[in-house]
Image 1 (tube, rainbow, N blue to C red):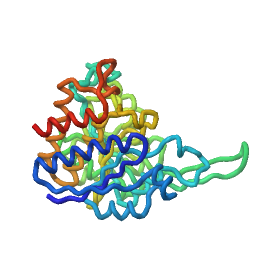
Image 2 (image 1 turned 135 degrees about the vertical axis):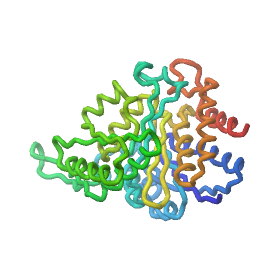
Image 3 (image 1 turned 60 degrees about the horizontal axis):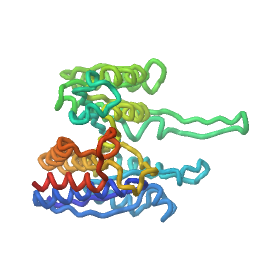
Image 4 (image 1 turned 180 degrees about the vertical axis):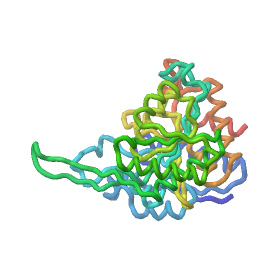
Length: 357
């Protein structure tokens, strides 16, 4: 297969972790006889510094012409001035909108080798394997916003808006995924308080009844879901929710495996290139120190192969290699829990070594 893959290293530890994932993809390309071409482009804070725009038009064009996109991370304190004209995160929101990436897939899978790295008891988390579907281009993050008044009378607002079509498409995608797993789907909302959630619940119920009557479907309020993730995470398989709720719940769920550094994500649309990234941030405090965990980004590369290039065997090869390095006791500092740790480059090299065998 010939594929054009765009690399968006971004800020902080982004260049370090994305370079390791790119090396893994190059290894896969050679091992399985593919032809992957890589091009690197700007996004986030570094794009602001060099062009004044967190998502330059050149980056948008390159992404649209690619088969898949691998992103590092964006943002950092350097660009946190609230009075700034633009911020790195604007580039991230904009690329999702520009490419129509309405569905964010976040697998929360516990590696048996790291079960003791979790802050929760083994008996609670063992066997956890949740696939979150977060709606990505609607809701409060894209709603009308503004401020009014001055001094003590100043106020701000941001609207949460969802349409029937936006709810339908994410519910359908999640329900199809549920059919390929354990046939269970949980929808999370706040229908007891929020009008957009009442629309969400009504539309979701109709789609499930008409199109997926065979799927075991239930609904949980977002505040209850926050508790359930901590005391009974094994009870959930595929979970679908809106933009803001998904953002918060998946960050909470990310601590079940013990580290943000182990969790990849995929942002998908309706036919164009998908965007793949770790769920963690840019971690500027450790940037350049060769201690960041690249495994989430490497696992995001596996998702890229599976979802954008339909290369399931190659994706599994990466996942198996990651499992092997963990079996061998290799750990970066975030998952070492006081034991011996290796660096970013060493962990990437270890995965490549297992792939090459």
